[in-house]
Image (cartoon, rainbow, N blue to C red; front, top):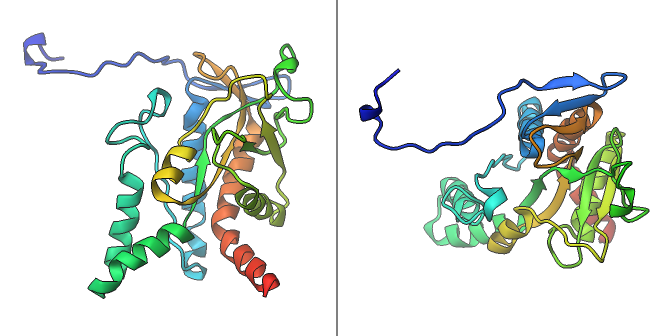
Length: 251
């Protein structure tokens, strides 16, 4: 150690140090603190690294952004309410464009062509509280990534972005679920509406279903973590082809 006098300042965060565990009758569940949203961070990064082999066949730029402060409003320099996303795209387009006059226009085009996948955990239906969900919109364990919809724009998904994400999974034989919160209940939100509003990017809000969100020990299905990795990878590797086929079919 060090003496107290040598500490200039600090940021203190208390957290559960108990290791995560696999459990359930068939070892089908993950028990862990902070699954929301470390599970999405893991799935996104794993999907990115395992998709590197297909970069040579893709003309897009693949990026994973892991923001701070989502649970307390995202209004910070490293949060989703900052200019980080647009600054990142600007720096990439500036580096790729040799013409000074074309840099501004290229940025606008890049933002409009970009697709933001806002990955945050979803509330799975709980057998003791099934009435908290709409009867046809109760996400279940082991049935794939959840696409989230909300008419009040608490989620940024629309019919086009949902279809594109769903189609990416369909091409790989991956299951997918839909979620709409009950109309008489409040709806949480994500960084999706924040970033899409600031940048104009197309956005889909998706997530792995889980129980006991924000408790010290959260629960999700082992299968769904794997489904998320594969679906996110499919998103990067299949989206360009799906969009091209869609445009060709409209001509």
